Amino acid sequence: MSTQKFINRGVRKITKVGQTSLAVTLPKDMLYALGWKEKQKVVVKRIRGGLVIKDWKK
Image (cartoon, rainbow, N blue to C red; front, side, top):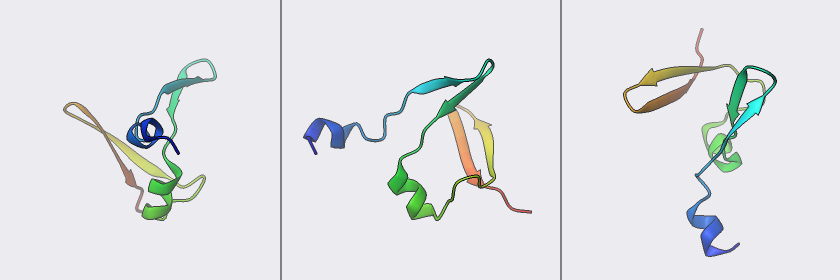
């Protein structure tokens, strides 16, 4: 792996999905560390200057 890829591995692009939705991919190693799986529910909360993504709890 080149040094440039290692430095920028947390940088992601926003991509268009369908007509009205946008998506951001997440690094696989971060999801494994959190124990998150495909199709898992998460909560997205807007904060000053960004977003917070947390696991959804009943």
